[in-house]
Image (cartoon, rainbow, N blue to C red; front, top):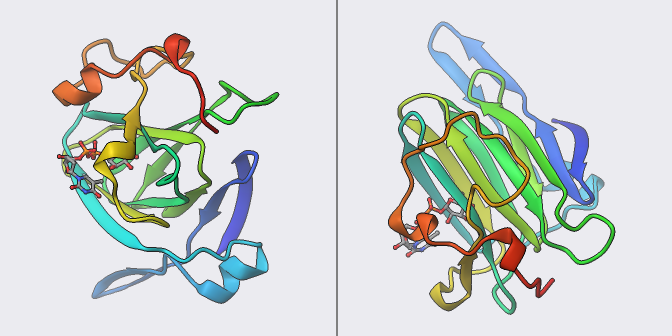
Length: 177
Ligand SMILES: Cc1cn([C@H]2C[C@H](O)[C@@H](COP(=O)(O)OP(=O)(O)O[C@H]3O[C@H](C)C(=O)[C@H](O)[C@H]3O)O2)c(=O)[nH]c1=O
């Protein structure tokens, strides 16, 4: 595992080893000792996954305190443009980072509380896997409208949930982080 870079302060992009042979492929996504060496020592409490078809946009999601959490994500199949919006008060507030996640070149993103996360699927059946450091809390499940901050998703009419279409604009957001 190679800790590539900090996409935003304390947001890690980690490239993963990918072992291929005539049977197929094996990818290791998490190793406690390797992560601990880089100061990432999280008690992951939940894991879940989603499939998304081409031009689906999910996000921008985050959990507010006291359910705010660290989040680990990776694309196990397909490819997405992953987008991160910094909601933490301070000089980095509003900064955006994005990176292509694809199963052919596997990598993981680990983000701390205060980062809104979303992605655009580039193909059908993109499989996104998540770990979080808190258990899901519907009352603290919040979002910012995907098209309300400075990022070009490359399309005007993505497939979104009604809920995501109704999130507040980033301009109206007041950060609790
Ligand atoms: C995450 C979660 C969701 N749900 C329910 C809530 C909704 O009724 C339904 C779908 O949830 P949502 O529309 O929030 O799913 P996504 O839009 O795929 O959200 C996910 O993708 C974006 C990009 C993220 O970063 C979020 O962390 C992640 O939750 O599952 C639960 O009951 N438990 C859970 O832990």
